[in-house]
View: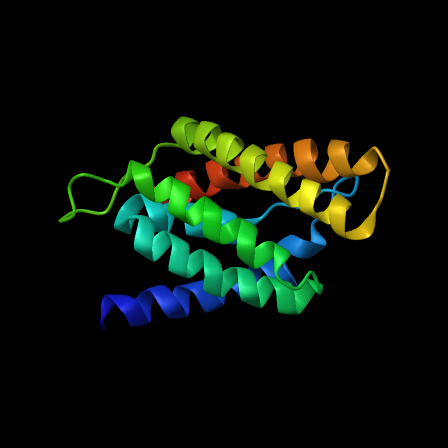
Length: 157
């Protein structure tokens, strides 16, 4: 199967898992972002172009699902592009990310992503609620980092 098709089908599967499973696993208003983990992995494995294009496409699908129209697409494109700067130097092998690395990288990337997302959502809606900062920025970043750690445990076996 061509790499492009495999990436696209896995991305659609990731969107379905996010929509059906992860989006419903809320803890105090926060939910993990599996799409962000996948986009970060693509950027790390294949570079800036693949990270940005996948962030654009999967962010568009997330905008359709959650009704944020352009915000998810913009933020995920930026994150995919930024993570692509740290591309795996050995293109012949897929990168192996250990669970502690996955947690730390997931936390840093999710804090960047969720901070930008919360800032844009506040500008769009004019909300002044502290729960956006506590649950959607910090809480969701830790939740996403935990899910990245669990995913790395399954992949590394």
